[in-house]
Figure 1: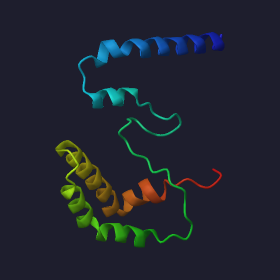
Figure 2 (figure 1 turned 135 degrees about the vertical axis):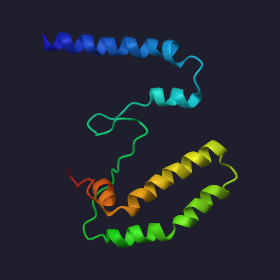
Figure 3 (figure 1 turned 180 degrees about the vertical axis):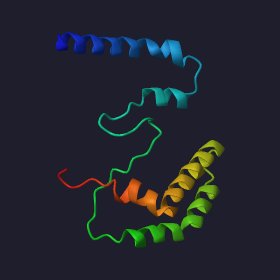
Figure 4 (figure 1 turned 60 degrees about the horizontal axis):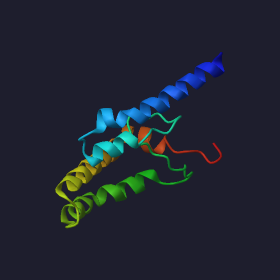
Amino acid sequence: MFFTYALLMMMGYYILKTIREPLLLTGMSAEVKSYAYAGLPPGLPLHSNRQRLYRGFCHPGLDWDALFRKFRANRMQVFELIESLPSLSERARRTSLKYMKYFYKILDSPKKRQEMIVGACRRPGG
């Protein structure tokens, strides 16, 4: 019974995946189409393919506060670099600035740093 149910679910998924393009993506931008193809990795606590999740390994003994201070000390240079890149389109520039502002918002909050970076690292072999 379970096998039959699983098979029906997989078949339904592949049928819907095949027909969603003509139904949903006709006339959409390339960016929207690329997000439609990007799937979420199973087993990760993500709700959107635009959501970020730190997946780095843990580094015992690392002075996280010193590392975060270094990033924060170079904040203005990071934003100036993004602003000065002639190859970035205006949209890419806005998106990059928005992403970096969110990154620095995390760095500015000890609670968010702990939750989203330090405490989110992967343990070797785990």
